[in-house]
Length: 444
Image 1 (cartoon, one colour):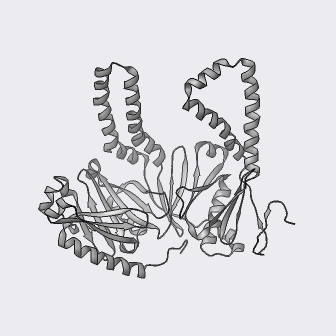
Image 2: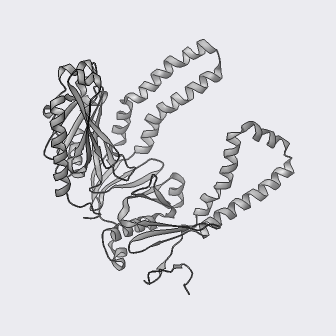
Image 3: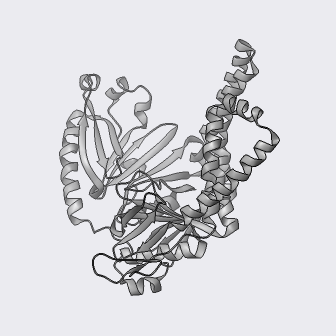
């Protein structure tokens, strides 16, 4: 007979102790029935209004008296029947009141483990544990755990994934982190003000809304068009400031640590060896200050931002930590497309460039918003050459490099002969790069 809170192991090993989520979790899950009603009201507002007008005060109070306890009971039962356990090789999560479901998350398939704290969770002292797992479209999560327990569980999972014995995994603790860079709030605010997306949406709204009013003389039409435009402008400025506030980058044996957020705090990790592509983005108004934005493509992970803004020299030093052995090629190392390419892509052809070193395939694009993509040869999964009829007429072709993060980096408008040679050479560099690459391992 297995004791309560203990999951019996069918392999004959000692039973695994199960754990529950934080007791505050039922409050979060109790909102599910209420959310269903709110969704119905939003989907059919006229019908909802008709139903509400038919209700008397007594009926409404009785309904609330039934709904609130039912929602509370649902939250409690969903929490009571949810357990998780950590074994030598996997994280098991059992859920379900009527229909039981057990998720087996193998530790070697975990790409990243993040700890996030929404505003109310910070007040309650709890946190979410989010896991990026190979083969899943969204993150698995345990919500909520005590803030300290979430960090301890994250450290335990990483220790076991790294090969530490179960009896010592608890003692390993979270790997120490050394701060590399912190983005000052003032610098972040100025960088967002100098981003073209915010001013672009405001300019569109300033032109389109008066025009709509002149044509329709309908306030509702203007509001219906103006609110999304102003919302987009706010999301690209205020929204990003709130999300990227106090951005701190640190280095530890389990990867690069990222902490950020004004209202919702997030503690993320960029795992070592899993980065497929690094992009240095340089908007037009940032160039005078020498700032760049560093973005990532990570296999099996949704983490896509490494630095919201940083001096170029500092960003390049961080890139060297993310991609060991890789240095960012200098501007003079890039070769432009031939002049004949201007007939394929007028004006913008000048923004394309290519540089290939012993360690990396680097492609540049953009005139107003420059973007430099770096792909280590060992991360290239396939190479393709594409040449449309108009390109064929002007003797140019595109070379596409596909990575393990379902991303593609393209060297555009290369001379046809050079593109064919690049295709063969890159395939060989990728093969030898994968052969010589070190294995990706937590805490290696």
